[in-house]
Image 1 (cartoon, rainbow, N blue to C red):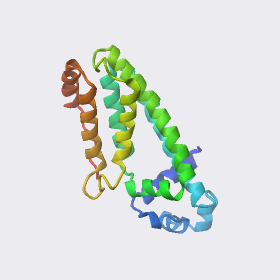
Image 2: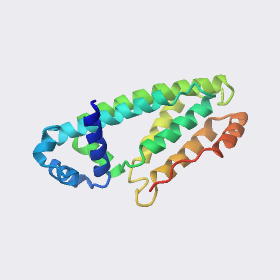
Image 3: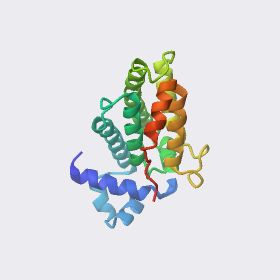
Length: 208
């Protein structure tokens, strides 16, 4: 994705974070960007192609996040803390209602990128769980596949407005609580002690 297209997608992504699903039209987005609909259509023919570009942008961003935040510096808990903090910062503006409208209005695109995202995160988390077991920080009786799927399912649940209405719960608060309970559920006694020491230095970003 070229820098100009990336910049445009980032602006659009910010704008639509305040939209209700029915507001997602090229006309509304062009108006809020301060350009004509014809200018926006020069980049995206319709709402479908725009959604595809947004989802590709999100997937590329997720890949870049894991590539720039190494699991290899420190132990497994260090790596998972770093990545989780970055996840919290990266997805700070996502509004669950829009995320779920993609599932309803563009089911083929949603399924395609949903699968890509889950496979990518599953691979990274599985490796982290294996490392943590080998380091004695995670319990040796864990099923790597099951625990990795639980992590992903909890991430998905955070975006469900039926479970967590965004007006009542901030994403960062939900993410921090989810991460804390996840680590405590898989860590050994030594792992919990290490986590409690490290988490005092970890500050999830506040939402403005």
